[in-house]
Image 1 (cartoon, rainbow, N blue to C red):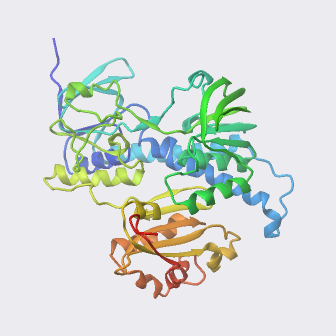
Image 2 (cartoon, rainbow, N blue to C red):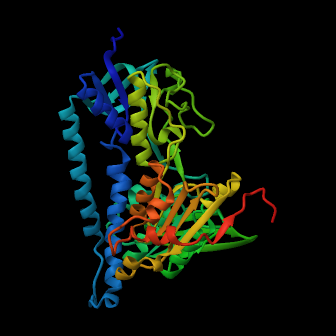
Image 3 (cartoon, one colour):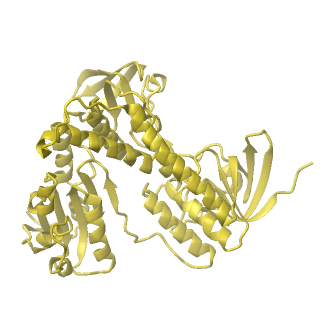
Length: 473
């Protein structure tokens, strides 16, 4: 005899950034809300991604300062890196974050159900609990927030080598002797530099001709020079052919490079070559939820799926894979469930790569402007022109901004320098307020701060008036 589903105003599959704020907000408004979470309370960010990785990266920065001690007049002879202690510092932070999330669910009045959920019909989810029992929940509105996972490409021997993903890399209690990293994106670059600073030999293998290959030439060249300076081997234009051995013991990677077969060997292998959506085996076809060609949940600009009353937020939608975008997804769905018409179109997508120095950007890059035929004035200064950077002995990198040619509106900003993400955020606020660049140029900013560099940047003369892609040479 079938059981009638339990009725809820809102049922959420997954507890990531966007969905947890939906749960807390609607529960606090007196709605009946249930959140189903399989493993990581609060989602990937506080458990296995953003925050833990930045915790590890900061420990690596401290290690780099120890190595540079003489530069600052401090003797640090004989220091050692204890990876177990590095890991335990990260674990303490994660435990505190998980406890916060648990308390927040309890305080909000929303129900948290730990188990595996899958759709069994329109708006209806069956949950398999740890004790073997099941529950069926039906929501007036349902939100899918199942996220993504590290993708393993179909390379012969890759799966058998049992490679690290970012999840396992953040749990290492021993330092890899030689870490081989497949992929030159955010995860690969951040963890490569961190492990090198802890003391590992590191080799990065990427299929493209440049690191962060979608970005401007000066950014990719800056990253290449940074890695070369820190002793990280970078192999580009590589097509991996096969892998043998076991990560944690000995691995061998065979790859093609300009028609020649080459081999590199190491102790550990980290795969950071992209993400795959968590949309399999959760019954989406039974709910009427369609997928994109790449397997992500198909949504419109209001984050509605193809099933009435079913929404999706976060990485599983195939949009920009940033926690702050997932948080904005929360605002979109919240407003639309309340009867509004909030769309994702036109929103800014800032980001920061937490290498040291950081690379952060908001708005257009030069490459994007040229591809779209948008003319611009380019303002650019080296970080050496920022006096605060000299006090920190962190003068690597640059600041640059794109400004429209027929006005003073800022079209885009890039920082490749110390605390680049914080500097970028200041410019983004000016862009949100639609301030002309002259407001930053003429501002009275505290001396000596890194933000003061924006005065120097926007007071400099544009080195060129960039041509559009279709302009004659």
